[in-house]
Length: 236
Image 1 (tube, rainbow, N blue to C red):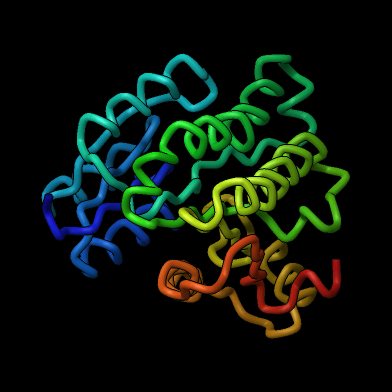
Image 2 (tube, rainbow, N blue to C red; image 1 turned 60 degrees about the horizontal axis):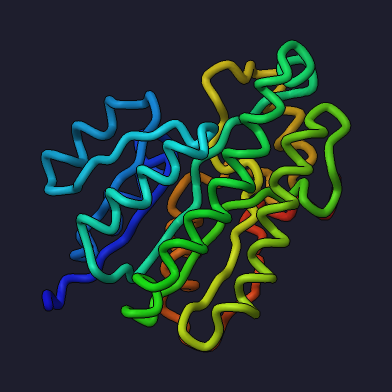
């Protein structure tokens, strides 16, 4: 069996997922990079040797197919990062009942299936899972009710699977704050968010990557959730 470690990242085509995939390739990992529609970053990863797998995580039948594809690519998995997200506010969710299903499936149901069904591969490597939740798990936003509920579901999965899969597999979470503004965030929004963040910084992606590496490399941490938010959770 190859000594090369393997990692599977959902939502690897853009933003944090893409940056993490590049970082793990730098660390010598065989990266399996999931994407739905964000293909630009996936081309970069494939050029570096990553394996690309496509699925819409809102469709649980596609999630089942995705799991089968991962099993075809590797017999063991050192790291699973449930990063894929859809940041739908109340108006988007309420416009179409399918959007409610999407939010719940992408953030809670799909990670449940991925952890459950990839557990044998993770156990074979004494691997770990890192779930990307949100600081709003602890103090939900009234503008993103379904999103916060779904991320809270993922936080609960983190604790339950940490208990269920120990000692073979460790399961932890990261709660990001304002790490990287979206292009549609105007200057007024950015200034308001930074004013409500004690460290007054847009964190960038490196602190998140460093936290994944910490959770990956520390063999005595499971069931933990680490805020990487510049202190913002203190004020929301």
